[in-house]
Image 1 (cartoon, rainbow, N blue to C red):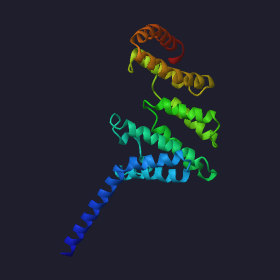
Image 2 (image 1 turned 60 degrees about the horizontal axis):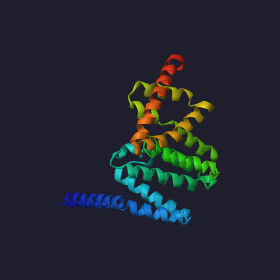
Image 3 (image 1 turned 90 degrees about the vertical axis):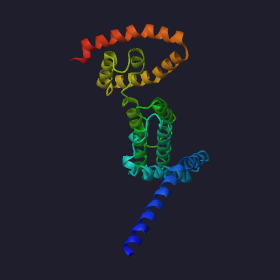
Length: 240
């Protein structure tokens, strides 16, 4: 009888715990809005507390540690907005922790998460621009770590925007240009070239998507240039 009552009590506790976790997850966006309000008011301490509460709701819901909180936990197409929100949470946390010399480790951890939740998504370019402008403004205390994050977010992408747009993701031309990118990315010239390419490409593609006549003109102009360039790379650099 006692065992039966204990089992019933444990089951009720588990149900209540599960209900509590579900409720925290349901309320997470309200908590996030509150965090942003604090952030806009420059109330950094309360903003950080609210951001941590938001992240904690995710951790409890997915039953993972923060180290294992990854984009793969979310359905990419259905939860792209939440993935972007998480990237912004870690961005705001990184800036907050950067204010204290004692919290630089936390700042670095959050920058890594910011990169992780940015890479490979449509908003990656936008997030890299946020980082670039923040560095240009001279707002970072630990400039080295922010520059490292900027380099990661810029160079970690496998995408070759214009080439992919003209030939397709699996084309031989895109594969060749991708290999070339990884060969030059650690040189000064390569870094500047890739950075400029990523800054310009999305604007060109956006222009094409807005106007079919421009799209036809740009495709007709760029396809032979990319084709010749990729062939030259194969003959002179890639296969050496």
